Length: 257
Image (tube, rainbow, N blue to C red):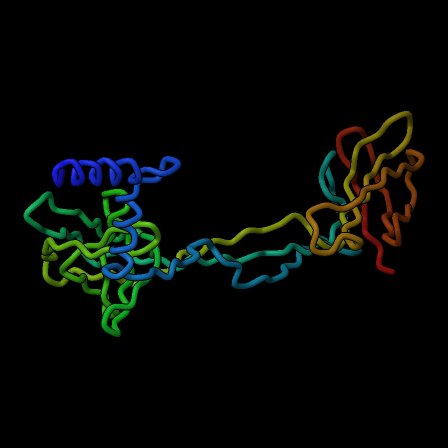
């Protein structure tokens, strides 16, 4: 009778070990590991905008004979926006390995690596960097040296492995490195006048206006034409003395106000 009762209990526990596809033993493991693992503060490793500057580009030469070919600027006064981005990473000071009884982990020299996050253990903060094995991480001390054990990320927490890892060479360190990138936008302010050749005895120009689109990547344009002749034209306040115009180029002088 006791054997039958014990068998019934085993069957009952087995039946209850899976509920809606969730293993009871997995739930128990997660509960137990919450006392033997450490919470991770995950980092946002995306690049960050650190600075924005404006650069002016002018092509204004008054009272000189100038030439503009079709599709090129007659006169321009444009301002570009340059955005500077920065990413905080780490890199090894030398080529190294984390040796253990199993396969050693290779750490290439000079290769920027992201920091996954950090954990606090006994008052010391360890930064976590990825290894060659998925979900396994190296633990880096505040001075850049390596902790002699690896960790594994489980359910958003860090479990410390019992295997011992020895860095080789002994001076293997992870050093901070900043990766920067700059990006120049299209004109965000100013104007540009381009020569577009001739058509039906008319001189063709295009006026690009960026002043109404500050901090944008586009402006509005206006096609303007004048009779094909030696004359002075006024394009939105810019005075241009035409010396010669044909389908290939424009010879002109910019006049001061």
